[in-house]
Amino acid sequence: MNLYQRLATLIPFLLLACANLAQATEDLEIHDAWAREAPPGAAVMAGYLTLHNHSSETYTLTNLQSPQFEKVEIHRTEERDGMTQMIKVSQVILGPKDSVRFQPGGMHLMLMKPKKPLKAGAKISLTLSFSGETSMQVTLPVKKAEASIHHDMQTHMH
Image (cartoon, rainbow, N blue to C red):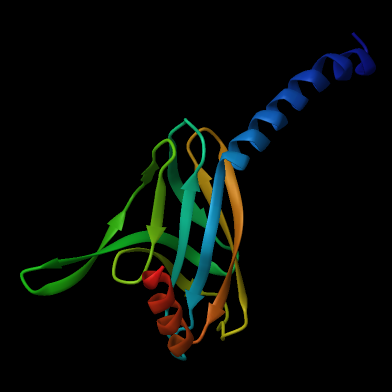
């Protein structure tokens, strides 16, 4: 079988694989993505977003990456014995027609060890990876702490 025959048999499979991946990411939508500006010299930043699943499938968020940070993790804030703690979350399950909100005081993104300081107005590139080889790209604008508090209040009022 020559190269052209091999390509002719492979192309339909590749198109089908790409169509399935595109369909999966159309089922997922991200809103209200942003990150809070950290104080100078801080080793972590917090990021927030709302993730919507418009499909009848279940998606499991398993990994996050950003070229601007050494590591990105999901944490949730819990109060135990009067102390507030952040607990690492290894995966987030997004059921059919479900939404998950990453917000201050709840589940949020921990953007660890920035490769350079990011001030208000900067943009953070983030890749969300789900089980089943689905991934999404999102940009988080960095906002000043005062602006993000105002944003939090507006978001909670809706």
